[in-house]
Amino acid sequence: MLKRPQDKYRPFPAVSLPDRQWPSRTLTHAPRWCSTDLRDGNQALIEPMNAERKARFFNLLVALGFKEIEVAFPSASQTDFDFVRQLIEQRRIPEDVCIQVITQAREDLIRRTFESLREAPQAIVHLYNATAPLFREVVFRQDKAATIDLAVRGTRLIRQLCEAQPQTRWTYEYSPETFCFTELEFALEICEAVAEAWQPDAQRPLILNLPATVEVSLPNVYADQIEWFCRRFGAREAVTISVHPHNDRGTGVACAEQAQLAGAQRVEGCLFGNGERTGNVDLVTLAMNLYTQGIDPGLDFSDMREVVRLVEACNQLPVHPRHPYAGELVFTAFSGSHQDAIKKGFAAQAERSDGLWCVPYLPLDPADVGCSYEAVIRVNSQSGKGGIAWLLEQDHGLRLPRRLQMEFSRIVQLRADETGREQSSAQLWQLFRQTYGLHGQAELSLLDYRISGSGDADRLHGFSGQVRRRDEVISLQGQGNGALSAAVNALRGAFDLQLEILDYQEHSLGRDTASRAVSYVECRGPEGRSLFGVGIDSDATASAIRALISATARLLR
Ligand SMILES: CC(=O)SCCNC(=O)CCNC(=O)[C@H](O)C(C)(C)COP(=O)(O)OP(=O)(O)OC[C@H]1O[C@@H](n2cnc3c(N)ncnc32)[C@H](O)[C@@H]1OP(=O)(O)O
Ligand SMILES: CC(C)C(=O)C(=O)O
Image 1 (cartoon, rainbow, N blue to C red):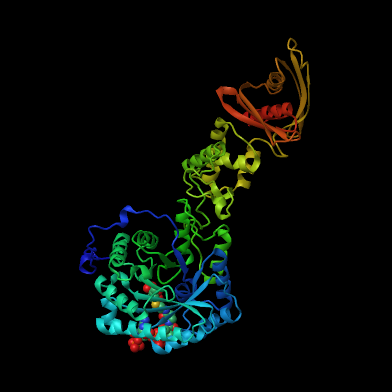
Image 2: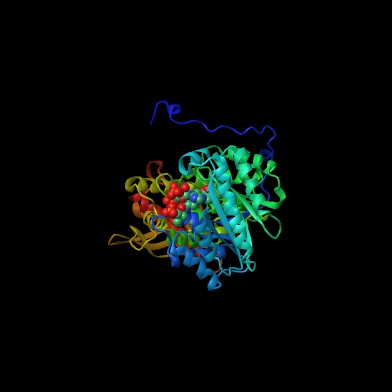
């Protein structure tokens, strides 16, 4: 890169619009959406879609709720032409959906475009020509007058061909391609000339589509351009202002949103931002941005994973795992402090009953786009106790006491650091069971036990039982004020061990009477070392004794 980029690149000039209104407006409703996945998206693919992929994509767009779909550049290829014919002849276009096709302003191409549209119930014919100085000078070698003439001649021919096929309800769309770096006065002049040639009214609708063909400036500059245009265009009420942002600067979404504040009523783009170079504006993000502001976008992404799957299959391009609202990782927290906040947020959410979504770090309820909470928290070496406890609670019903969370998270941390890998929920559960002796090969396992004297407050409780340690069966005998203290005394005697209970908690693992109980016992052993034991049993007392044995085994280790 250059030390002096100013020698090579010039900043884009600002628009003089001191009384701009758009910054103090807010979005209150969805725009008219037009998907151009099958045209602008398609022309940017390594291998353009065949008829079968186009048909699958078209059906998806219809199912999502799109009412305007740019389906082809019919004069570009036989595939595109035939696809339009199939849609029409096989009556695959729902009544409330209007297909759109694009053409250059060349007579042969326009005529071929109309051939593809024979007997269409309704259609939008989209004509474009580039208007910016660079394109006039370098690509077309035309002056301003010739550029206007090209657009006007194309418009007149389209009008004539529309009139020759009155059974179709026609809409005309004109795009001054490269609008965002065309002199504003000239963009206005050419659009006025096109409107004059078309004569828009309710029966002859006109869409003026003002594209950011290549993003060259900040979104606020684009918004200024749109507001400037909307305020000056003569027959403003008779036309729909549409925008078509690309994403070269990574600000396609901001451009589309701010352009709507500035007066745009319609947005063209692609799902997940496919399209030329860095892509067209991403319609999924735009729609979900509205949704999370409480505005119905009029598009339904309830099964986002399926939408991703289908679009990936049709485009043969992956959707990034961090893609807003849709990527595989966008509802997942790996880091400890995020997991802690999310866990607390879910608990607070469950306590409230106002239905409002307020969970830290999650701007959207994953369930609204068909995602489960399973992936919300995943554990690796960046994770903390909150996330680990969440997984054990969600997947196994365990509500670990805070100090046990701290203890086990240190053990998980060690494992994650050792392996350098994510610890899946299944791996965590295995580590938990191994650590606390909850599996078949525990170092110390309870074979049987009996408690005597319970029920009479004045008498001491007696504990007798047997545990297996490796191949050895060890008998236990002890007395105490309660069952647990009798068992503690029995273990002390059998293993000549300092052992003291610091804390004890239990809860049931389920709601019905047949559910099991889980006990957590924190013990102090030799040299003041404290640690937890965990026991699970269908009987609450047995689960407590198992927890004690689990702690003893760990102290003996
Ligand atoms: C910003 C956009 O996305 S616009 C849409 C772009 N999409 C596509 O181009 C995909 C489909 N395109 C195609 O299949 C082909 O380009 C076709 C069939 C349209 C035309 O093919 P060709 O006749 O071989 O021309 P080619 O592709 O080289 O296009 C360049 C010619 O079109 C002219 N041209 C470009 N845009 C336009 C336009 N909107 N109106 C009229 N002429 C145009 C150029 O000036 C150039 O003319 P020249 O050959 O006299 O110098
Ligand atoms: C033809 C126009 C709308 C276009 O695709 C663009 O400017 O990117």
